[in-house]
Structures are given as structure tokens and as C-alpha cells.
Length: 210
Image 1 (tube, rainbow, N blue to C red):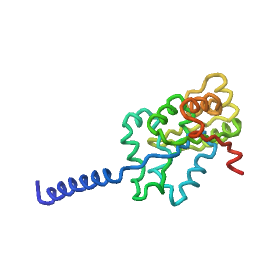
Image 2 (cartoon, one colour):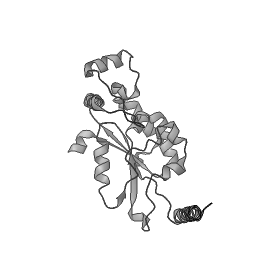
Image 3 (cartoon, rainbow, N blue to C red):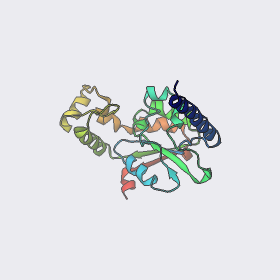
């Protein structure tokens, strides 16, 4: 090993030691608020509004997909924590949050996982007129681009055809289940089973706009 490589090796070890020391003193935060959905009901707007507040520190990105994607959930809560900012010195003055609208649609697995790993967090559910929500989701999928790592799948059908296909049981892509995603009753019920009223907020898209 040459001098340069030796220096890089020791510096890398030193950097890891410093990082571990800092994390022991100032660990990563966990969200106090989780915006769980619904899709196309204002989750992005609320997330962007809240993270503009100087005391709200955002995660590495809005949609973390930790509780709904098995490969991510399998990485464990330590990985999840790594996606959030370091605890500030005046910790009581700051919070962090996340927003993954898919958590509502997959309420059966996400609600108990969130309740287990984030016992102090509040879940926010945003609901929109079911038909308008379904149409908005279809309209988004018309122009969605298929990118590596993206969950989006383009939908080239008309809205009428998409609805007819779903009613006939022909839907294959989970992202194209427009009617199922607008069937909120069972999804909300799952969260009510795992969260007390004090930690579950439910608002309508209409009230958000007002």
C-alpha cells in the first residue's frame, strides 16, 4: 500500500470514527408526523408548506417508501433513521416528518409498522372526492416517465377505459387501481385500529384548499 493509499485508508477510518461519535452524541431524528396519503389529495402541498418552517427539518426526500416496500423495510429501522437529519442541539425546538401517500393504500401492512416503530408519531390522512382523486391519478399516469427505481407506470388508456378495465378485474398494475385507491373506508379503519384519536388527523382536500 503506497503512502497516498495509506493516508486515504487512515483518513477514512478517522472519518468513520468521527461520524459514529457524533451519532452517539447527536443521533438521527425520527418523524413526529407521517403524511400517509391519499395519493393526489394534497400530501405534497402539505409537506412543502410544513418544511418551509424553520423548525421543521426535512428528510433526504419526501417519499421514503420504507413501510410499504419490503426491500426497504427489510433494511431495518437504523436505515430508516439514516434518512433523517441529525438531532439539533436544541432538540425540543425541531421536528422532522415524511410523506409517502402510498402508506394509506397499503394500510394493512403500513399502519401496524408505523405504530410499532414510531410510537410517538402522528399520522395525517388527507382525503379527496373519490372520483376527482381517481381522475387526477389517471391524469398523472398519462405523462409519467418510467425511470429506474420509480414506482410510476405510464397509462395510455382513456379514463373511461381504465375504469371499465378495473371494474372488470383486468387491472394488472397496482398504480392503475384508481377505484381501489379511492375506497378509503377500510384504509382509514386500519389506521384507527392502530392509532388513538389523538395521534390520527383526518382532513379533506377541500378544507386544505380553504
